[in-house]
Image (tube, rainbow, N blue to C red; front, side, top):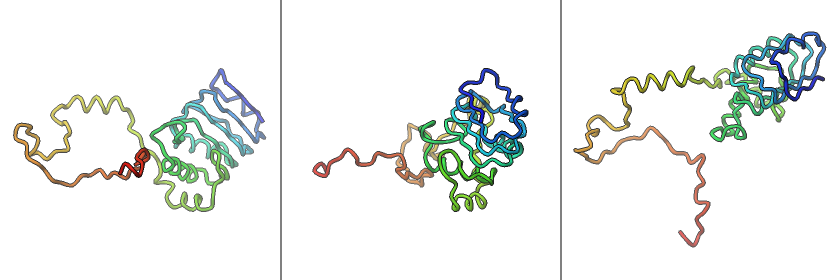
Length: 195
């Protein structure tokens, strides 16, 4: 087993001399999307917790190629692993979709992050895992610059007839947004005698 608390160099080229390596812990090493592991055919445990990995699909494709015997993988603490501990906007559904996608790409996994892979998860990953990929815009700055460059394309949810603020009338229509109360506190602070 090789353990490292903080790598000063990002190169993991020296690992190729350990072809029979079975466990590799690279937690908290500022590793990013440029992570390249040598071929390690006997590696069954890999932890990459608390690094700077943001691109999940490229990492999984690389791992499938260079570590075919991988059974335990942990990516907690990376942006690529959506959970509520890293990002408040993420929830259990986001994390479950991530698990399905990882299991679709790495079919031999028995443990992912801190949980054992269930039979139901494996079946769901085979059916829907390929569709659970999270797609992000390539460059957020470019898309916001393009939006600000064309002021005539300013979005408004109002129909064209009601955009004039001087001639206001009530409008009834369907709303595209449905509120499910997913992140609501509800009536937590209202007592029965106040109703």
